[in-house]
Image 1 (tube, rainbow, N blue to C red):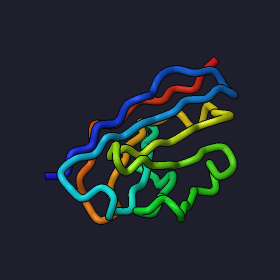
Image 2: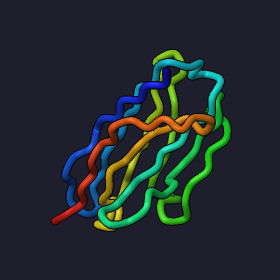
Image 3: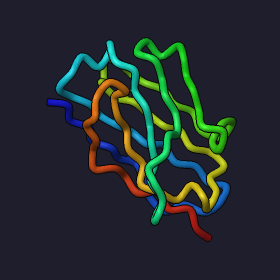
Length: 114
């Protein structure tokens, strides 16, 4: 079955950077579009970014466009989220997910605070 393991979260000051990773298994990773989502305390889970299976097409939420960058390494079955110029409102648990699956990983906590 689909398994997803996110990592790379932590505590960072405003303006700082983090790089999240998600290792996937249980499906043909190179054939599936992938996405990052996040859920802040007391809020619903929201879309952050998507990347096509071959990595050529990317899409971002307005709130992160220009600051975050999604990428993937198909041989490593890994999708990344580079987050720059982080803001306190980026604080959330971040999840990766294949677009065609309802499976979720455990997420990784990102906290932006001075």
